[in-house]
Image (cartoon, rainbow over all chains, first blue to last red; front, top):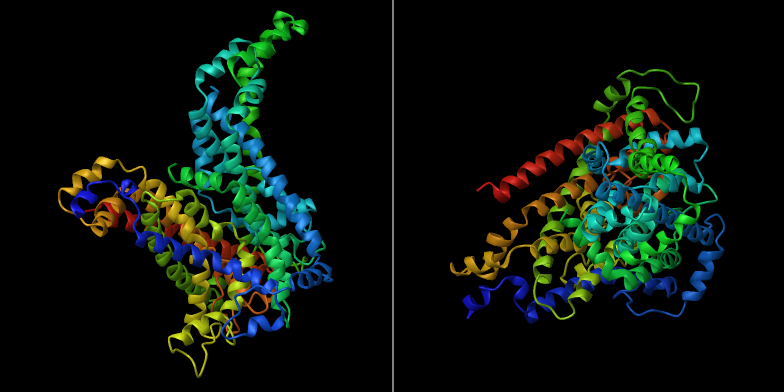
Length: 284
Length: 326
């Protein structure tokens, strides 16, 4: 019996009840902190001090939200808008510049194509977090510290994006299609717009999701450059909420929940694309 | 999108067709120069905001650069680095970083492997499970860490309640933030929670690329599921394992968000009252933007960069030996 089953590859072997149990357990652990964030966000102060802990949502969500949104010095409402501005700007710019460069690397003949692509891949390995001190000084010289532009500018392009787009365009668009358009007299930018962009929508969705999630969740650099200003991103505002001598957790977690909701919505809408993007990224 | 579309657009063009000579130059420009214009934005922006800061960081590290005393400038030579060598804060932070790194990377990758193995079956609702395990990945680390901060509180924390169920710490609940080991475990738990699903998908994608006949051939030896995993699957996905080890090394040694927000008062960047869980990235933040000594913070960044390179190389070698060396 067991030999017959195992001559199959695992992906052809049906899951047993044990596999489902295992998956369910992992999913429950993955979801619980987010669920509990919601529980505390909807509760009164004593919910965090219960034993056994409370796991049923209360009815105080509106009260807690009102407190978070009206707090002085935290600028929570503005922070959500700021996060949205930053994430949308970074995502749009990454999609545009990376698909342009990916197109050039995949389909256009020019001197140094391969060498320059190799440079792009090299830059993937540079942990750019390590340049934060110098980046801060640079932003200071530009007069951008404390402004959203300081968070947007470093995210405008990504080496991963160029690489990902090059791979996708290389596979998705036959050379003949580009050649035919060129023989018809279409200029490069026109080919990009009428041939390439319509064909790479799935890849744009994937890269867009990955970029938006990463940008929305970014904490260290926004904290450095925006902390103490009137323009925090929502992550910086959350850290402000949680700082101080006396922290009110239902309020903190109500804020955390609000900042998490957009991403849960994205996961529900674009989960399929996100999974595919991560899995494709692994094979590079 | 199709060829016909392209032809249609072309038929409109001759109306304002340029004279032949201009057309030739336009064509030359379009094929010789435009490709560079398309890739230029990436290289220019990366040069300014990616490459330049890393190089300039080296210059800052060799200078006096204080935010609170702009008049104190000039070359410091190796001063920042010699200070680093005898700075116990730095070495303590290095130990913390490594401790948390090991506690988070090893279980993370092992559990991710198990999870990928579970996902790598013929499942009902395969997409649902795959999307589900990404929930921690999309959850902002600031938000989830604040949940865990409550979860690991000494009084009424859920972690202690769970421990009390198995009869541990009923008289004296564990103060997770107080001791080194417990704070490391708490922070490592947060890191593991966030990255297991993501890594599992990376492994899953590699597992599904293994040719099926490899399994058919091995079934003759009567390999059980466990042996199948360790003898066939894991060696076959070794390149991706290597990739995740390097990714976790780069990410783990720069750990900042979790230790930062685990603190009862994050703004201080203390990493515990005795700095028992302060990581290097956190120390860099504290030295740079609390002590306002950017020159010294830059030197620390360079030291961290060097350490990451060395550890990533060692891990890469070790993973290669474990997987394919036999």
